[in-house]
Image 1: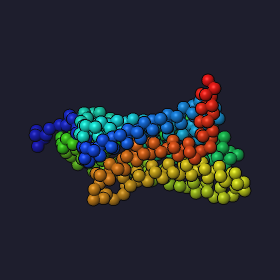
Image 2: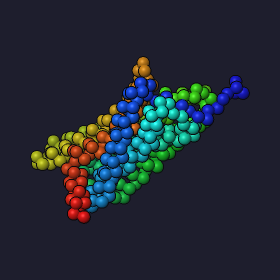
Image 3: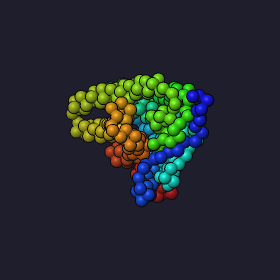
Image 4: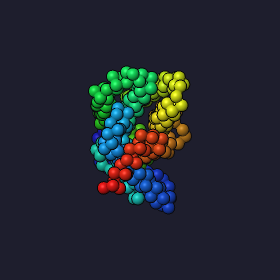
Length: 310
């Protein structure tokens, strides 16, 4: 049988199987979302870099989240738009595998950065007197670097396990980018080890961090209820509610996609859920933080005033 195997060189991405009119509509809509993602996260990152009042641990983590969201969208969405314009598009095998690798790495980083942000809020609200020690710049830098390094190492483990497999067909992925579960369906060997590692990684990178986030916010809720000041209540709830919106969107869609029992149409379900990772989450994150955060809105107004004066 090995002598009759045809190794894959090019892969066809079937994308969204809809009519031409709907494809044009989706292409235009997703193109707008993509531009809003790059613009919104770029503005958030720029404001944090330029405004000295935002040079704090919380916004240091938020700047990393903005970088991850830009990278995540840039990795996945252009190929999706090409797919919609051409109905079917092809991608070479190794660029496809690299897209899978980066997709996993950025997803892992976002999980860990969200945990760091929840720890920052916990330290700020529950231990305000020790906050500068618990979240010193050294601690922030170590947490950020560790998140990036660990995420790329974990993604590299998945990459090595994928490359050990023989890929001899089929030559088509029923997806709009090279998502790992779809790529594994191209293998002509048993992928049980890959599936076990994916599930273990989900437990470690999704369930574990989600539990830490929920415990942090439970402690924060108890601390908020003890605050006597009404202004303190509003500020704490405003900051934490925006974080919880992001956490709910990201972890919820990830757990449903990789850990929940599959539906009767798992591939179509995967496409819709992947949109949350690739498009909706990166686009909504800057909106959530800018619309619900007085400090970010204040920094944006100051930047606009400076631009008008110049």
